Amino acid sequence: MRRGIATVSLSGVLADKLDAIAAAGFDGIEIFDNDLIASPLSPAEVARRCADLGLSIDLFQPIRDIEGVDPRRFPDVLHRVRRKLEVMNELGATTFLACSNALPTAIDDPELSAEQLRAVGDLAASHGVTFAYEALAWGRHVNRVGQAWNLVERADHPAVTLAVDTFHMLARGDDGRALAGVPGERIGFLQVADAPVLDMNVLEWSRHFRCFPGQGMLDVSGVVAAVLDAGYDGPLSLEVFSDVVREADPHVTARDAMRSLLFLEDRLGTRVTGPAREKVTVAPPLPARTDAAFVELADPDRTDYPALLTGLGFHIAGRHRSKPVVWWRNGGANVVLNEEPAPGPAATALGLVAPDVAAVAERAASLLWPAVDRTRGEGEAGLPGITSPSGLHVFVSAEPGQTDDWHNDFVTDDAPGTFVSDDAAATSPADEGWLGLDHVDVTVAADDLNQELSFFRTLFGLRPEDPEEYIQPQGRLRIRALRAEKGDLRVALNVSETGAAPQPHGVTQLAFATADVVDSVQHARARGVEFLRPPANYYADLDARFVLDPDLLAVLLDNGLLYDRNDDGGEFLHAYTLPVQGGFQVELLERRGGYTGYGSPNAHVRLAAAARAGSAVA
Image (cartoon, rainbow, N blue to C red; front, side):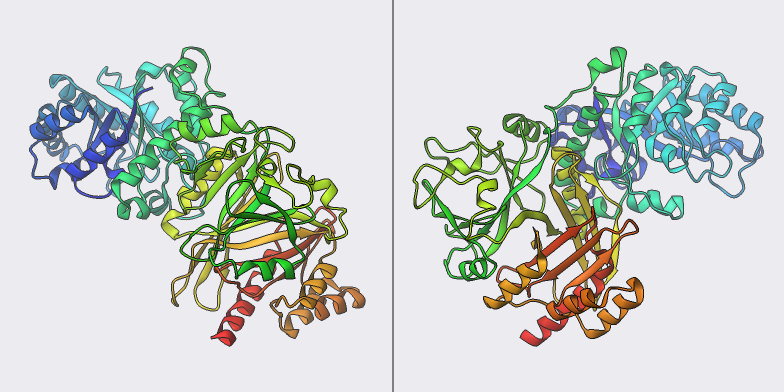
């Protein structure tokens, strides 16, 4: 499968875009007319530059509003097309894109439009090229792919083909079935873009929120599979408009773009049939399941975190065979404390159990996710590490008892060379019955959200949940939570937008599940751990909303716990520590009756309490 990208999908000037596209390994490009108009390079020089970089010019994008035109003005359209075809011949391109008429003056007359497309087809054929006609989602009269195909059929000209754009189709509610009956040889070009599901003007949605496959929520692979199964034999080409790509480094964007096409091809492996199946590159499979194993904290001064962990009920379970790393545990919850030199205390890594370990590492490499450079001692677990776009290191372990099980890297003080299983440790008198890491919050810059989302989706198959948004005392907080299809891993990606001081990025919350959160909070407080205290008004509101049992309400109030309940009667009790060194909070929580959420209705209370606590400390 040949892979391409439109120059409009990257920031910078045309020469810089070409360099970035070639460096990322693309085969071809779509040249956006505005990029060429603003370039000091002549079309012939652009063609030579592309040839030197190994890039074909697969599409020229200069023309719109060529059908449904007042016949008195149509000669002007033909003049415009003729001049652009001369430029196109210098570029050496053989296909141009023509978008449906979006002007208020467009005439709703299919026969007239077909006649005008036929006339443009004659002109294109006289220059030895073809054009692909695209239904813009905001076109005046032609805004769906079926309408565009109807006009292409009416035009009945070999130089007039259909352009398929996944965004324009999906934004209008069409899917791959809308292409039923369209022969692959009549599809002149395929453009690919994803997007989040938003309820807004489709033009604004298109111009500002398109993203690469794997970053949005549209069924891009379904449309592309239908195109390939129809027999389309052209390139798979990305066309993305967004505020993010307009500002990002073009080399970073091009790398993300290539990764997205590799992921899309991997998805297509299970959706295309026949000869099309052999065209796509399939990555090693997703892990069978993905579970949280441990969190790594950097503690170079060896003073910041031991007191916190002790206060939370953790104890030392083992020491690394060759590195200054200490394993702490409380029941099924595991934290490894890394004492190697580091810029300062922080939560720096996440350990996962995701078999097959070797396949996960191969999948990461095939999707261009960077590996963590680390040394391993003799006999230590493989633990391949991958770096997420936010800088989080994710280490992948085999299941307990296997060769690449992370526990094998540690020895216990009382029995060198052995470790205590999670099940056994959960019954240890020194533990308090914590169940494990429930979820981790990672705060990222707004421009990095799509990349971080793509990392967990493409590599581990995590399923994004609906976006959520909350008002902070200053600014807003946006959250995209992801959950493993199989396994217990949960990750919540946060974007904090405030008018105050810049918010810390990286891991900003560690949420541990306990069998009895009241008992866990009471023990932690007795050992000196400080927790946020919601105001009395919050508990009055709880009583109004849920008609709580007075004894339960008193327990919540006395222990500073937050509470939520779903329609099925599932309950969620949770509490937050004050922010600790390294910029994160610890959440202790208890789920009852199958509650699967995160206590979202309490977010504004937690954020306000955290702001008050920060002001008091300052």
